[in-house]
Length: 450
Image 1 (cartoon, rainbow, N blue to C red):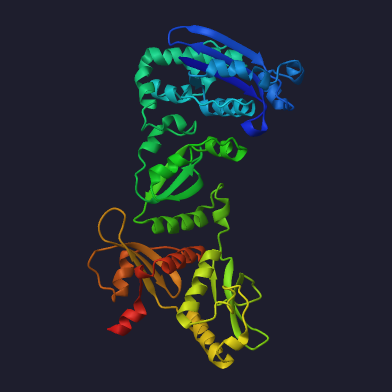
Image 2 (cartoon, rainbow, N blue to C red; image 1 turned 45 degrees about the vertical axis):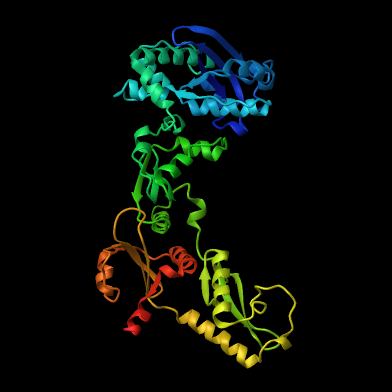
């Protein structure tokens, strides 16, 4: 029923490291049925510090079989059994990767004795295999060797079963329970508290520092998504090992979550938010006069030596804005480089007439500094979610009552949470406003209409 496994490796992630030793103990819940151990030729050098830790040297594995040579035996022993290890995702990722490289498609249910021990033996100071064995009076022979650690894990698992662990194991295998996929240092309770609402989540390391910030339409589903799938890259394995806690902030809408994510990344500078750190304005709409004297609008990457009429983080937003100008002011899509078909200036209106329309489009684009609100229904709860933009800068956001005065700016601002302005946040707001113009309310236009 159970296959209790321990391996020794040349490093901490599967795709770039090899296995140097493997031990598999078949355990039926009462007694050991079969035991298999073997040194393995890893196919790469064994680092000195690993040899010092395990005692396994390059000379010891020189005559050992390659993993591909014992893959069939390993597959036979593990197939249709529950895979058990201490910090199970590490051993599982290595064996799955190397079985796959040897041509075997293998998946298994898995149990982690580290996580099980936290629930069955609460209150212990540490839950590493060595610490647990000292606390529970389990004798380990050949520590940091696959056979010795597998024997100790088997005794530990037997103690877990005798302590009533069967009920916990049943819970682990329930469809809705996700504990078996969690990183080794993340308590299951942190996942259970996550709601299904939009929001921003934060992964913390051992020192409670935020190492990753993300936004979600559903916090629970998105966070779980980080821990599913089979990815053995060094970055992901290091990332999962560093996660010790998850916290979150619920948001009224997905847009609010996107804005708060951007703000918090700029504020906390998390280690693993690489792309979002650099999410600034990348593209602009520029104008120039061609050889025929016609003014032309074009999209280009932001250039500090040139003055853009409007800037955007995403190229798609820049195109959306330029197309809107073309339709609003009846400009030529060809002169704006949006239509690549050949054209003749003779087919256009006079230069003076056309240029006047371009000038009007540019002036309106530059002078369109009206304060505006984005108003949306929150995903959960009552009221109206509001984003306030003042002087072309993000002011803040929050929930308003269903009945409020659009003309009372100061009262609206009092109800909102003030936030720092970032160009990347304004890019998000502009993109949303272009995509959902029916949600945008310009305060100047409203006041003029009264």
